[in-house]
Length: 97
Image: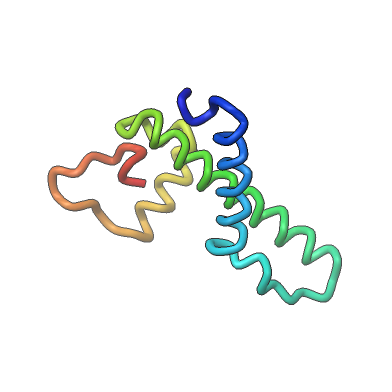
């Protein structure tokens, strides 16, 4: 895949991951006191950030790919139930999600 070639593109992946942790997951704003709660929250934030970066990479490689490459059917159903239906004529490909 073109996004995985060379050291700078791999560096971009790491930078994008930490950017998602800081901006999307707001990892720096977590103020939990208990170590167990903090470790669980960080683990969930890391999984979320990686899935967003992974979907971004897949979208660059194949914009009309299947979203099931990233999400399970249950996750897609949960997402669709909270966001409503897409505009008419819009397919639910990876670019949509």
